[in-house]
Image (cartoon, rainbow, N blue to C red; front, top):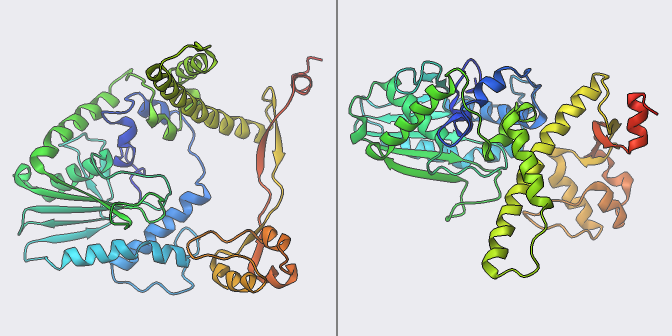
Length: 383
């Protein structure tokens, strides 16, 4: 079960509705239709299922398939190794009275808000040492820092309430993000990022999260743009986001002076970079909505529906075998470096018939095409 199931204020969205985010996003998102899970999200759910089974000491066969129908592969098995080892090492300090939970629903109804509850991947309440350990596994690529992470802060609040820890301000907390597929590693080169924080340091952050939660559930909650817009399902329909997008375009189109000192150059470059990031995010949200409308047969000016070309790709579970074969044909294969695509290997002299058993052809998918004014006029019936 994920945070988003049944929770109006899930910790996984705390970066969006929390103190640094947008209070109005909760009501805005509630008006949006539910989105179909992406291939990436389905893989993430399958990897989380594998993690839970492993932590529960249950055997997962080599040909196992997760409850959502996604096959468990070697990449998922490798991804959970460091986290499982860390959990098992920590549990060696378990004493009578301590307890450990895997994917158990907890709530922050009193400490945060009645609409706040969640399912942490794993947590360990160590009464013998007045310490709480919380682990959050992320299978995506985007970097997430453990330090002052609102999701982890919310998890801590929910665990405190569920475990009925009265003197938690005197406790210590170890909050861990496990992110094996993120390219940005910690200082030691591992996949784990830890934040060690005292209950006293955590207290004002939990207070701020509680205030933000109540603001998010208030009528006419304020809308505010920022980096949190990137993950908001209502971004395309948000008036604040639309206004900010227009302002960003004004910044980008602005004519700068040709006589600028180093400080002015640095400041404007930073502003332009931030504006471009915002415009890209808004364009991505609008494109997704345009694609959905076109898929339902509705017309969208200056856009039409197209299809991607089927591409040859490696079978995920057979890339190691494929690497050995293409290396014999002189293709440069290096450990830790992505294998060239099948088409690239064929161009480098690999016999296509030899690698066919290790490949698959991706299904074509819908894509958005931008069209000129005349095509748009025909769509609108105004020639």
